[in-house]
Image (tube, rainbow, N blue to C red; front, side, top):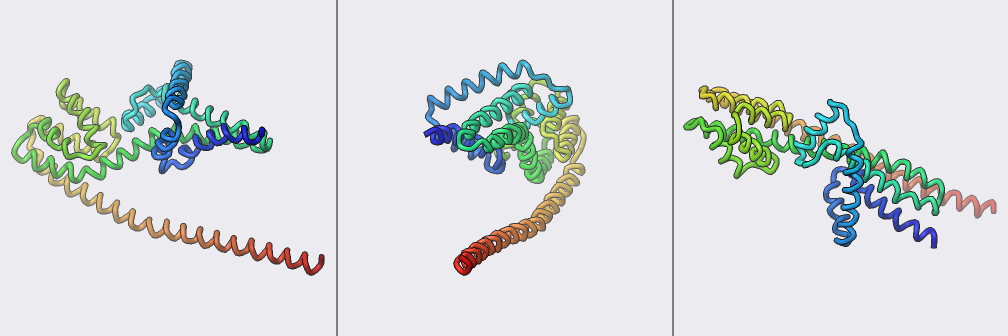
Length: 287
């Protein structure tokens, strides 16, 4: 009975740990877990975690570099919270996952090691979530830049109205770039062009987007940047081709490693079966 009762919170702990360990499908895992919980229970849990995180955030002190880096990642990932609150939420969720695995000690004391391992694993995964999302958003934006620059090149051939061209492209842009353009257009309407585009470059943290921003600033100042856009378009397309070629070369190596892993697993399975049958035969012969 005690073991059965211990498995309930332990199961919750494992469910909380799954999204942290399997980072590639983390968001899908979180949505599935939320859907499995009842709405009232989920609201109570989220409210409690939010209260603890808010209180803990007031106690957390980050150095200037860590704070700026985390703030940049949160902005790129679209998280509307302070770096301290983000770190506090990571600590709170990791602590909850660790506590939920503590009842496994009733099953076996050695399983306490699991609780000790859950906290750092879950914390590091939660702490790095914004960074991974910001990298994914930056990669998505960079993949779209050749099309974006081609559109800018055509638009600026008959007009130097940066705001109008960006507004027109935003309606057909990808999700990540559209979100950044919406912020940039709001900045354009309330401030200087140079400031708005510099903020865009800093938020995304992409060298390639920085080249685009410099071209936009030059165009907004009235310069004839048609040659610049022509050169940049060709450069971005060439980089994109090189990256696709590199990814295509990496894929076969990954498949070969996976094939070797599968083959090793099958070989190990056969060896275990052969060893077991051999031991059983020897027991019959000499028993």
